[in-house]
Picture 1 (cartoon, rainbow over the protein chains, first blue to last red):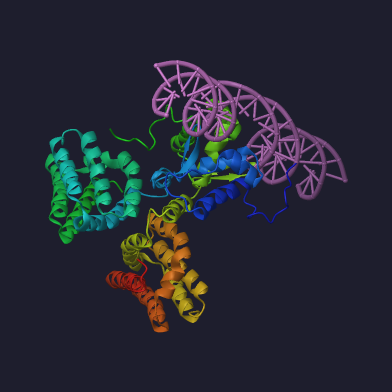
Picture 2 (picture 1 turned 90 degrees about the vertical axis):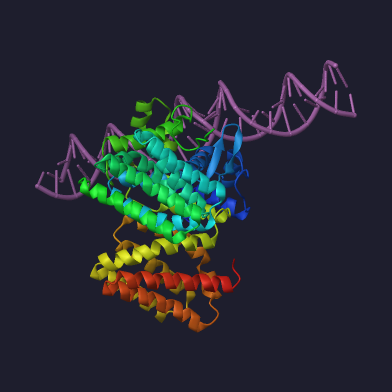
Length: 239
Length: 239
DNA sequence: TAAGAACACCTGTCATACAGGTTAGGGGCA
DNA sequence: TGCCCCTAACCTGTATGACAGGTGTTCTTA
C-alpha cells in the first residue's frame, strides 16, 4: 500500500524522525505558542501518509522532552518551557558516570554567580521576600536535613527565577534532580554543626545582597558559598 | 498547592511514563555505561506486563532525548552524552518566543567566560592549535559569511571541549542550533567591514590567551567579544 | 579450517480494535 | 427565550497480530 521511496525522503533516519520534524516544523510555520493545539494524530497520519503508530511515537517523543503536552481525549498542545528533558540528560550523564559531581558544581557556580547578580538587579519585592523566607526556613529547620534540602533547592531555583532570564531557570532547575540525590553528601561533608550553620548563613548573605540590590555583593556571596561547599566535599574525601 | 508537573507520579501517569522510568531505573540498577545493551522490547514487554506498543513508545522517547541509541535488528544501547534534547528545548523556547536572543547571549557570555578561563588552564596543544586554526579560517574566509559562521560555531564548541567539563560542552552545543539560525543577524549588525574584522580578531585574541595559558586574559577577551556583539545588535535596533 | 548458508532474534511499520475521556451541539424542560 | 442535560463525534491510551528486513550465531560443507 505504502510506497517506500528508496531514499530521497527527509533523510533516511526513519519515519518517526521525519514525523518529529514535521511536527516541530508545523509549530514554527504556524507560529504556535504555549497552549496552542496541534493537529490530531489522525490528521497527522493522513498528512504524512504514515501509520498512526509512527505519528504516536513522534508525539510521544516530543512529549517526553516536554515540548508538547499530551492529554487523553484532547489534542496535544504546545508546552510551556520546562526542564524535563534537560534534567533527564543531566541525570543520565551522572548515572552513567559521564559527568562528575564536581563538574556540576563548577557549572552551577558559574551560572549562579550570574543569577545572583541579575537577581540583585531585577528582583521584585516578592521574590526578595521568598528568598529571605527560604533562608530563614533553612535555619529554623536545621536539624531536619530533608527539609533544609528542599528549601535549599527552592532557594536556588527562586534566585534563577528572579534573574528574569528563563534560560538560567531552565539550567538551574535541570540540576535540581541530581542535587536531590547528592545533597546529603554535601551536608554530611560539613564536619560540625557550626559548619552546617555557616552554609545556611551563606544563603542569608545572598538573600540580603539581593534584597539590597547589590549585585557585586551577591556575586561574591555566591562564590563564597560554592567555594566552601566544594572545600567541604574535598576535605571529606569525595573526589 | 504545589503544581507537581514534573515526574514522581509514577502511579497514574500512564503506562508509558512508567516504562520510561523502568528503563532508566534499569540503567541505574545495572550500572550500565555508554554502549551497554538494554533488554529487547520483547523482554521489557514481558517484564512490565504491557504491550509492545507501550514499550516501544518508551524506548522511542528515550531515543529522542538521546539517552539511548536504537538500531534496527540490534537491541537498544545506552548512549554517550549528547546535546540532542537540550538543543531541542532551546530551539523550542526560541521559536515559541519564550526565550529571546538577548537572553541566550547573556547565558552564553556567562558560560563562555568560564570555558575560556578553563580552556586556558587545561587545553591540550592540539586543542590550542585547532582554536587558532578556526580563528585563522574565519579571517581567511571573511567574505563568505556562511563559512565564517561554521568556524565561529566550531570555535566556541572547541573552547567548551577544551574546558574539559562535558557539561559546558553540552550547554554550549545546545545553543549552536539557534546560533545557526540567528548568526547572520549579528554579522549584518556590524556596520562596516572593519567591524566584522574586529569581531574575527576577537576570536584570535581568545585563542592567543588560551594558547598562552592566561585565564584572566582569556576571560577578558571573551567578555569583550560578547559585549561588542551585543552592542552591535542593539545599535542595529535588534531588541 | 574457513567460507557460506540457515536460523533465531530483533526492530520498523502497518492495520485494526476497543475502552474511556472531551467537547460541542441539539433537544427538552422550565 | 434561556438554561441544562444528553448524546454523538472525535480523540487519545493500549492491546494484538502481522510481516518485512537487518543482525548475529551456529551449523554445515568444501
